[in-house]
Length: 368
Ligand SMILES: *[C@@H]1O[C@H](CO)[C@@H](O)[C@H](O)[C@H]1NC(C)=O
Ligand SMILES: *[C@@H]1O[C@H](CO)[C@@H](O)[C@H](O)[C@H]1NC(C)=O
Ligand SMILES: *[C@@H]1O[C@H](CO)[C@@H](O)[C@H](O)[C@H]1NC(C)=O
Image 1 (tube, rainbow, N blue to C red):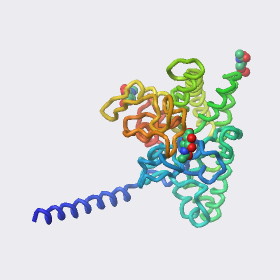
Image 2 (image 1 turned 90 degrees about the vertical axis):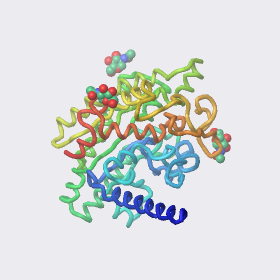
Image 3 (image 1 turned 45 degrees about the horizontal axis):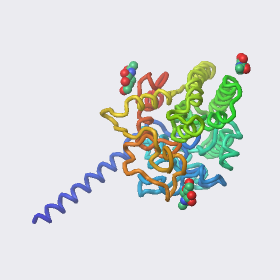
Image 4 (image 1 turned 135 degrees about the vertical axis):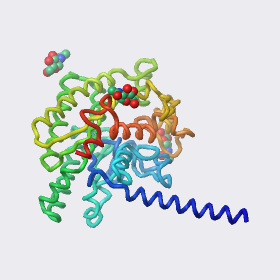
């Protein structure tokens, strides 16, 4: 009898779970599609198809240990990354698929809901990542791929329908960190470097606009100097603990330049709208408030997966040390946040106030 009751309860629970899943799937999407551009912070597997070194790949354990089925997919995370979690808030299941994973028929069925062009190790400059990682997809090539997709859509649906779909879709961009880290190795004139970086960024946002994009969600460069890899760099160079300040100074300086560039574009280009997430402020806020009602981090400096000082001296792979509790770590590997931190970033991009997202957040951008 007790067993029977238990099994009825179990069946009822299963039905509830199924009903909840059905409801989730029926949740309306706020935008027709999401297109993603950038680097490892949002790559969902494009680099699996390249001849890049293992440092620019994440398609092996322990990557993905908290992803459904613990699958290593190419995401530089223990689970979902910021593109996935933002996509979920917009009503999608996860990030759109990696461009290089699509072929003929899958391309045709997927391109109307979005594609992810991001490539780990890449940057705004064409040569960023090339020496360190081998083959990566620079921003210029990500845009060439997108241009081919737009052409394909136009052939199938006509230019009016394509333009309408693209104008309502979200274009999510997370890039610039790799350019900055490479520049920091042999610094020249910082002002000139930053101006060049933002000018290149402007060119690519303008090119996307020309192809039909109107709604841009951009995330600025985070305080890179506090990455475990950069803490190790400081320890080696100066023998002291802490964030690597030259990189933090650069990313701090880049934010107002990026903000001014986007504001200028919105003024120049009719119908161009954007939401700029201030990654520097977001990460600084979490460092200053590691414990709140919404989260609790106890390890702020060391990577969860990886060995040596700060978990940054030996890369994350199947034989590397792995922390037990990913929820209490800010950093997953030497250069990337945990899913928990990406969740905070996505939630803040989507619904945050003007301390963190300007001039509007992504929910407001989607509903425009
Ligand atoms: C760096 O470049 C800026 C802009 O070109 C210039 O005004 C400045 O004097 C340069 N700084 C140095 C230290 O050369
Ligand atoms: C994992 O990385 C370490 C050092 O970073 C390396 O010595 C080892 O061979 C790697 N293991 C695998 C399975 O790739
Ligand atoms: C924005 O949100 C943060 C975090 O929730 C909060 O600390 C801050 O006071 C808010 N700022 C404004 C202007 O509402």
